Length: 178
Image (cartoon, rainbow, N blue to C red; front, side, top):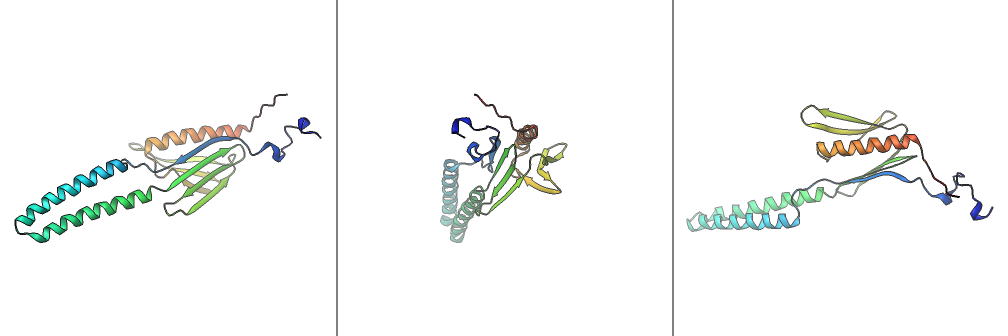
């Protein structure tokens, strides 16, 4: 059979994988960027230095060191916070599979591949705060997803993912032009 006369529904590898219906990369939100962090640390360091100098001139010289220690501890806490922000989740939906890939801030990768026909999205909701947790449920397994998003972001993500799952359940549609 010549390449021009291939059957488009043959399922051969020449057609490639199913087209992506939905794809999202979820990352933790950090409200203070690198520039804001630098400005904050400079202001905190300056205030601590001035306050420490006041105590030093008053004769309470050990207090000066504690002000420096406070700045160092705040810097250390922010560095840990930024390090944990390296975690992310990737959710991809095609007509034949839903893939959830979680990468921890240590670089540890966990990946699950589910059939979108058997997946449903489960939510834990609070009347006042909105969606607290989202789960992908399939064949008795319950996988948490989007854990570091806020309630409004979880609601938006849940709506988009539900729409993608409904589209996947309708099946692939391919248009072949002759």
